[in-house]
Image 1 (cartoon, one colour):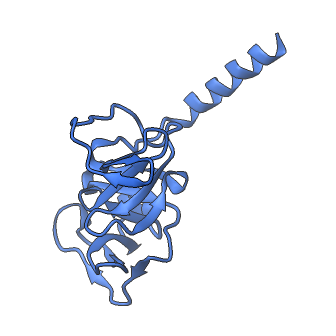
Image 2 (cartoon, helix red, strand yellow; image 1 turned 180 degrees about the vertical axis):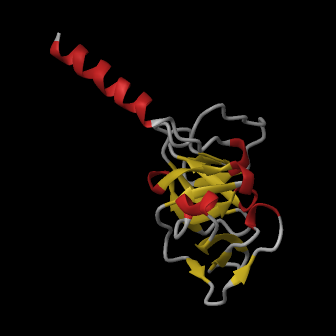
Length: 158
């Protein structure tokens, strides 16, 4: 989809973004079914490829956290206890929050995991709506960010 003056229209040119959403691209995260806003790229802190999920620090109030706890019995979610996340607009399950997990998943406990297949992204600078699965939400290692800041600082000093 694309924003054309005042209307959001379906994009027909098969846009394939080769960009990282967390690398300076500003985007909003929407339910792929009803387009309800669920979050934005400023709250994204990475992705969990093995779970096909975007990791977010926060989501909007249009994401309902289930009171019921579920347990994973196989795959990556084996031995995990989690709550599902639902879109308030259409009641579709859009992700989960892990409450208890083995040490291999300790770093994502209590964070919001949005399923990439159920999420669309509205990219602000290109004014287009694309599937979240077409984006890379992977974060650069902190050392790369530090090196970039050092380089920028040296340029400013000179």
